[in-house]
Structure formats: C-alpha cells, structure tokens
Amino acid sequence: MDASLFQIHPAAAEPIYRQMVEQSRRMIASGQLAAGDALPSVREVAAHHAINPMTVSKAYSLLEMEGLLERHRGKGMVVAAQRGKVKSQSARLDLIDPAIQALAKQAGELELPASIVIARLKEFLEK
Image 1 (tube, rainbow, N blue to C red):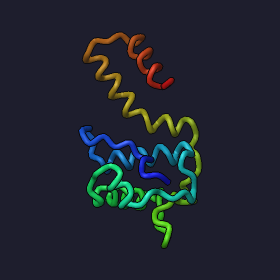
Image 2: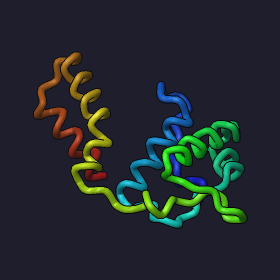
Image 3: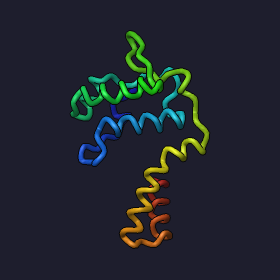
C-alpha cells in the first residue's frame, strides 16, 4: 500500500491523526481497504506527508483498539478480517452525516439556497 493512501490537510481544524482515522474507517467501510490489506508503514506515511511518526502511530493504534486494524509480525498493520467487510449503503451514509450536517449549517449561515449548494456538491461528487 502506498503512503499517498491518506489525504492529509495540515491546516485543517481536524487533527491529522483524526483525519487518518476517519479516512481509514471510510475506506474499510466501502471496501477500498479489504480484510488482510496492509497499510503503509508508520515511517512511510510520516516521511511522505512530512508529519511526526507519533501522529501516524496514534491513528493506527486507535484503529487497532477499534478492531479495524491488527498488527502482523513482518507485515505491519493490516485490515482486520472480522471488520473488513463492506458495510451497507445506509451504514456508509451514516459515516458522512456529520459532514453533511456541517455543510447544511454553514450554507444556512451564509444564506445560500439549497439548490445552489446541492448543485455545487454534485460538481464535487462528479470530479
């Protein structure tokens, strides 16, 4: 697995380790990461994104505690077998509800019509 697996945004309000955890959850839920798939090493991710290795380690440890990842000697972190199943569409939609709620709140605060926001969202989804 390539270290560019993660899209890290250092200037974002969300801490980097949380970005990694949330992205991993979504990739596992959608089947982009299947049971047994190896994740890039802590060193690879840290070097690729120029971040502290402890940040990557923290993200991996949280995912391991959730049962999404497991450590394999010689292979590093891999997607856990029992949790590597693709979730239903409804369960995957639940994972993006917080982002949609935040978008709806911001659009309301900016007094943007729903039709314009939906059209813009559709543009991003089709990219």
